[in-house]
Length: 497
Image 1 (cartoon, rainbow, N blue to C red):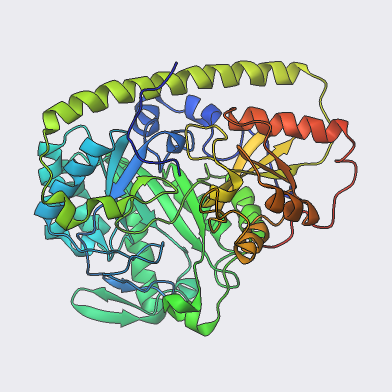
Image 2 (image 1 turned 90 degrees about the vertical axis):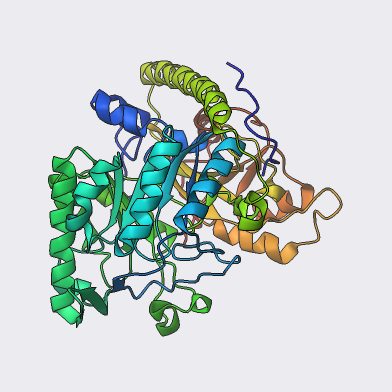
């Protein structure tokens, strides 16, 4: 099926397991109860498949926070950083509603509205719930979500359920107060600032209580955890077991962002983030106990658009002020487009299942796994020029099939046909970001990056433009196997970026 044009924006192992058992895969979705599958099939943050097709947005109505995290530094007027806790504009509930309706009318594949900060939504209950109340009335076709640290969650569960919110994300970094005291210097609880192990113990108890209450209400819960090497990295597998036992649906283990220029305590003190290998190994070790989310982009608290892009500049307050929105007409258009997308996804899912069945009938390879980078702007196909890519999706091909591993950010090497080749330093940064990958698949690759990629031990491939990602990755893997390139493991494989 040919999808309709959605908008006029420019295109922009160790401990491993098979494609049918890791991550938020189609097979796992198919095994879920209908009630859960229906909730996540068009939710880009809960479904790896959906994130290729559907968009999300966050509205920044919650400035205050009731805890302090060593990895957080909130910024309220910043357009240059892409991480949680950062926004360009704080919004009132009225402004948030207008912006949401403007985005939904302009980007019809947008399905989800979330409140995730820049502080904690439940530490700003009046602003948060007024926004949800208005949106549930005025934009009833949009899913509503909230992300919280969980401290105020138990007291908010009843109110959340009243507003038809059926997706909640809780950030749970530990279930051991001793570890928590190394992450959270203080919490603000019952009009007092509490520090140390006592504060961490209260936070953990509130998080677990809130999780249990949400599950009892039938609300779907995703758990976020920040992987902090030397602090909680050896502990997060236990967190995964605990939250799964209490009914959480998905676990998102995210890498610590700790660049010193962000001004966080960890950044200033030199606490490093995990390497891609360390993150992958931890996610694999947790995946036996919990469905793992691997496509998270650690979005800003005012992000707009598909995961991996941010169109927030198109919807600043001064721009939406002049927009005239016929939301009833927009809903009708959105319904048609969503049906077309869903039909496309269903068709591809069936085709994928058929090819997986054929793959099982073929003689099984005995070759080692290989990581490959893919340049894509969505819809599950290879459709971005290497020089235009701002991020790469990382897939692992193995005799068991293909599975999504992660994404890695990159600087755009080429600004257009007349400037390609002028950004050698940027190119080197991008190549370093792809460390551990043995191939990069894109719609086209220029001569200069081709040569540099080969020198770095990464084989460029532009032969599969507009083909489905997983089919192309497996085709390249089989070509590598047939050429004898997988007999020995290069020293560069699984190198740290």
